[in-house]
Image 1 (cartoon, rainbow, N blue to C red):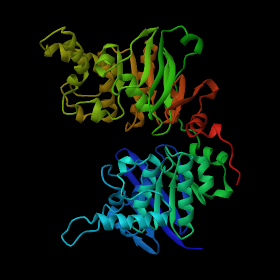
Image 2 (cartoon, rainbow, N blue to C red; image 1 turned 90 degrees about the horizontal axis):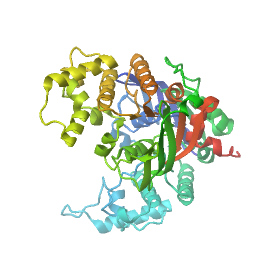
Image 3 (cartoon, helix red, strand yellow; image 1 turned 120 degrees about the vertical axis):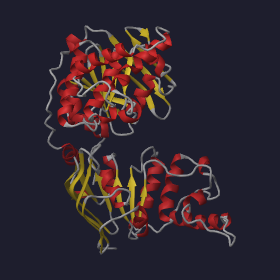
Image 4 (spheres, rainbow, N blue to C red; image 1 turned 135 degrees about the horizontal axis):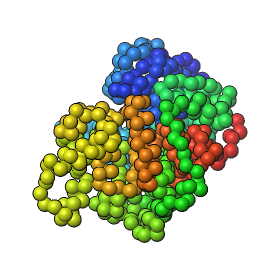
Length: 511
């Protein structure tokens, strides 16, 4: 059996503007072990492994690969050291062969400098046989199943003599056969000395494949334990920790009061492979939260409702009237507003002034309806000032460019845009990402006021304490399906996490 330390990361610190992603994190990986890394969205897992892979620089700390200390890593250096990463999304070139993908960065050449496809296929065939992967190396990637593509991604990592393998959600979308093939591959090469960092939200499977597990929360290491010394019922509370103390707790309405309002129904929205027949309803004045892990289909559902993407099936009903949006233009006409997750890329025109951003959607509506053909600049600015005062947007003037505002005030400008467009149904996707604590509280108060005014509010958020503090109901999505609706005493951070991970419906593994 191979012994010794493959990797030691000590006191790793990584800061982004306004966010400390890693706070003096320690992590080590032994030779010939599988070390699972778990935590909620935003816990710091991806940041840590990207630092090890050389994709992200770190601010301070030490990294030892084997017996050698490294003051910095970049992708080429990490690859030279035998570190290979298999990402959740397959990073393969669809229209070339399996063999060419495997040796893409080191293709065999003829003496004239052309790719020697025959030698490439022969070398790939040898490697695939060694790995026990039954795929023809001469096939195009586009002709393969998802499972085979995942296995080819792993073969690609092995083609460069991996000593440390990072697997990020490797079983996502794999069926039972594919998962078993992957686990067999990991076990075989672990016994030969391969060291694996295994990131997964499928907590039950880490008991099948991992030797140790490290839990991260809010950029800090909570624990590292041998797999035989822990359990699901220990790991989940460690991932959640002590519930965050919110600066804001909404005075929520009783269900009886809400039942008197108008009814918005999301009926059987479906898009193959993305959103799986999701239905729920929201009352006027209700704040309905949507929780789930990254990739659960939350944003994709919102895009179907707003008409950004086409659904295979689904209807949006307001008090029985069909208001299903076939396009964003139709959604706007029906009074639907969508505050996207990335406000800078898709929510704002950053180089334009505040007033133009606020009046933009309503102006487009009026142009479409031919209400007016000429701009009234003075009125446009006056209308914008009214919105700025209502939302307390901190700007010296409505002519200030939005790029110069803080994140919280930029988010208020996006909200002002949809309110000025007379939106009655407002979808917030990650409304407080990148916003400081004080501004978060202001956004929450604005959401509360919108609910009190009888708007239909839907909030998508990865911040579970935020959902618990702000929402009347939380729906939890997993693998594109709505798996639970939580209200009252059941609406806790622990329940959200359990349903997001599927822990509430699986049995404790036998060790």
